[in-house]
Length: 195
Image (cartoon, rainbow, N blue to C red):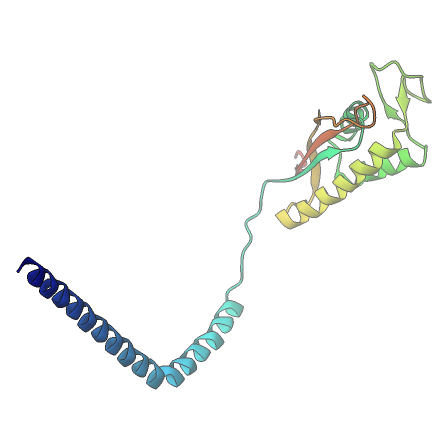
C-alpha cells in the first residue's frame, strides 16, 4: 500500500516536470520564431544606429583637461645613485631643453658635473667634478620622455620642478658583488615669468 502511494507520487512529480519542460521548449520555439521574423529589420536598425554614432562623434570635440604637472619615473636604472644625485641637482630648476643641452655637453667632455662634497679632483672653473657618461645618457632619455609627457599634458613652457634619485634594491651578481640600481623621479611644471 505504502509502495503504491510512493510510486503514484513519483509518477505525478515526473509528469509535472515533463509538462513544464515541454512548455519551456514551446516558449523558446515561439521566441525564436519572433526573433527570426524581426531579425532583418533589427539588423537594419543596428546598422543605421552604427552609422549615426560616428557622425555624432565627429561633431563633438574632445577637450582635454590641462594638467598642472608632467611626471616621469625611472625604476631600477643601472646607474650610480651618487652620480645621479649630483646630475639632478645640476638640472633642477632648468628648462627641459636647456637640461638636455647641458647633459650633451657632459657627454662631449665640455662641461663637468659639479660634485661638491665628494672627494673628487677639481675641474676647470669649479671645486670638484666629473663626467658621468652612463648616468647622463639615461637621464637624457628620461628628460626626452618628460618633454613628451609635458606636451601631452598641455604644458607649454615646462621646467623641472622636482628631481629626486633614490637607491633601489641591488641584485647580486657573480660572487658576492652587488649591482648598482637607482630610482629616478622627475616632475615638470609650467614656467611662469614674474611680472
